[in-house]
Length: 626
Image: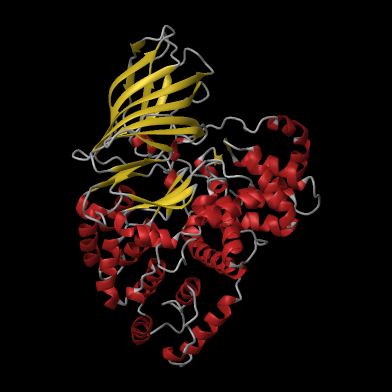
């Protein structure tokens, strides 16, 4: 959004005039209710306070059969109850009357909207129920679930299923108020085939070899309800944290993520105690579409970060940091995703610095900054503001480098201006103040004004804050992350480009971040001095990029090769694309292939791989080959 200069000049005056009124908004840790354009739910009339789930996992039909009971708080008794759903079959709806009897309720399921799904309207006018009970079944192609056959798992012994609710996919397997602007606790009783371990984002209490009970006493937004079932084993890190994985991968995962307890303690020391009891990791099959998902008490993690050398464990730091930013203090709307991801990326980098040194933290931030610089020209301008103008888009489009890295740079800017001591105090107070609440950018801006800007005047202007939050692109005064550790990498690359043999480069002590920088800063195919085919093949022969065990390095290598239409990598690339389904690592490669002479070959690879991809991954790639 572009504002005229005259409007920008008025902003500081308007902010000061509103400061006294603003104080009244913060007498409780919860900000005003926020209308969520991505939910049908009438949360101004009624809000869910607790959810009770009775679920049966049907692997034969790839569906969850359920009874969802919503405990409601009415602000407008007599209003209808409007819920979100997507491709759900609703078989019965009942309400609990004042005499404790369940009564049938009339309901209407509207036509499907391609983004929002179907509005479920329940007529509660006469009954005014405190609880509503809904019987339902998910579709085999539910957008929030993935079902894998035993053959598609690592151990090939049992089938596997998992959910992925963010942003608005919870409604594909549960009828509920699917918006991050409200929060509810939940209980669940899950029945699954014998031999499968069921996990949820809640405290786990096995009942029998087929039934498991779960309790989540803390109120959470709907997208953080999560479920998984498969052949799983557990290894503890300490008394409050551990890792779940398929038995064949458990030792690798335990070794890779052994620093998890240190990470928890590090964040606690800076930003306040961990409030969720346990913190466990679940290593999912390679088809999991993201690096991680911050489901409370149980982060879902991609196996692509198991590199054998703990070089990619910042993903764990990121998902853990969400226990404060996102899970504890939540964006009330997906247009303010930066409140979740920007804060989390900032805290993640501080954890990496504390545990692995400032230089590694600088390298990771510099890499993220470089990726954002490349991504910016490809994004619609409206989506380059922190407070994103999503309009009628799918909220999944909000997930880019903007909320993550631009949000992180904004907080780094504040840290540099006010100093770490003052900024750390502010962030800790911010997490405590809004704990278990959902807020928007306006609420954050008001809190920032009172608790940082007003305490240290004339350090940062309101206009600068407004530029960060509502301006597009990166401000001209944004920090530019750099790392001295990249100087030796740049020198080595330049030496090779000038004729020094690869074997003579001193690369033996490089870490994963340096290798990524080495590849990502190679001359572009459109540059005045592009690489030759012989140079590309020499790189792969010397450093074995095509067969590296680090999936991030492999991705950067394949990206470089495809930019040059060097298809000697096809055998290894084909295996890579069929082995993993992490969206960030496969979609860009398919996009490059779809524009190349090897489009037909790529379509064939996708045809073979798509049955093991998550629905989000498949739906993102399929249009490239239609």
